[in-house]
Length: 203
Image (cartoon, rainbow, N blue to C red; front, side, top):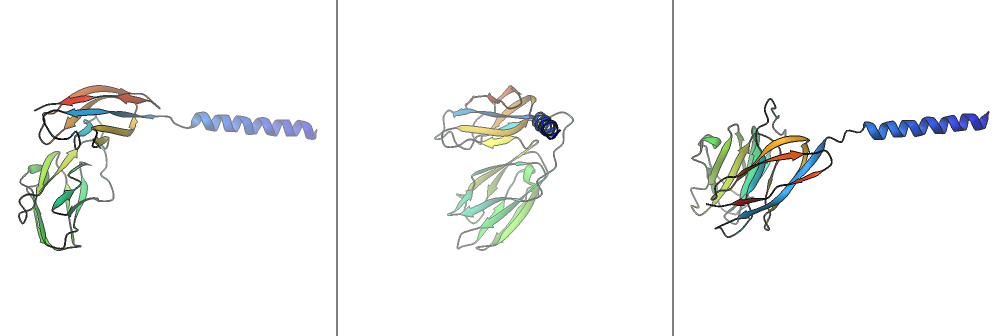
């Protein structure tokens, strides 16, 4: 009898493990590729994103994301965000900075000027791109790109990008670049797979 109960227990454990394994959802895949940026110095700072999905809205992040000012530069130079996201602007320099934008995607904001270690915030509730400028240092320029989905990436110095955890389905994949014309492609994402999409951007 002990042997019988032992076999039954082993059988129950095996079935439970098997059911647990197959009940785990494998629902997402990835998109990756290369963006060749013609006529500019670097392939970096192109944004690749999944365009709006019919009938789907995404809640904004509960935590703010950061764009810093350091060495008279906006860091990162390009910051893609989901619509409704709060951006926190920190001055890391030992002198004062200002942040303003003439663009509607940033509500034509002017956050004023502030010193080292201080922060100001702004909520971006409109889709589109917004240039970030400093009226104390005209050479400074950064970009915030407000997007309709959380599935986006920025190209690295080689022009490569990767977007993870994209639900399976067919989507319109688009690009944004501060100087080059946009491009788009249809992409189908399969669970547990990586879809490869390359772009060549031109003026």
